[in-house]
Image (cartoon, rainbow, N blue to C red; front, side, top):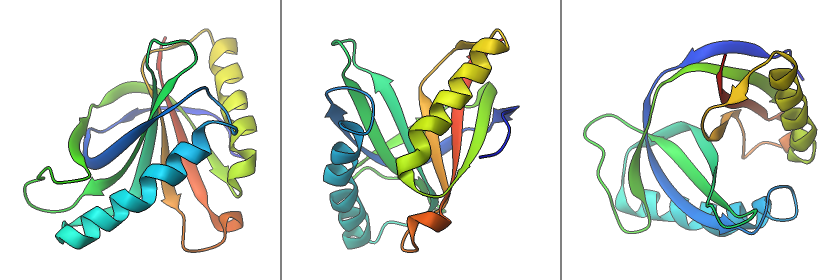
Length: 157
């Protein structure tokens, strides 16, 4: 795990699909990702849509208890982004200030990385100011032990 850094994040257009997790954490979120990720990839490939790495996942409270809307996406490639069967085009906005942390390795350890990030933001006096994002800088098909994921948390000073 790297140290927490504060930086701005550029806007990005993505091809995305979403599902609902009944709560945060490893018991609820990964099954939703496993449910929506393969059909999204298949739909984009079948349609011949130009998309590229990195994959970007983000999480938003639904307002219904602990439920989270889980989004899975890839960056839209060159040309005009188009909606299709199985995905939508989402313009992720710029973030003027985000706390970021780079997680190396297995997804089993990402929860502790998120916890460290949030504790650091709280200790620095920041407040969460938008949906958290995971940007998969290096991921499959290689082993998760080789993955590199940037955690991004929009914050207000």
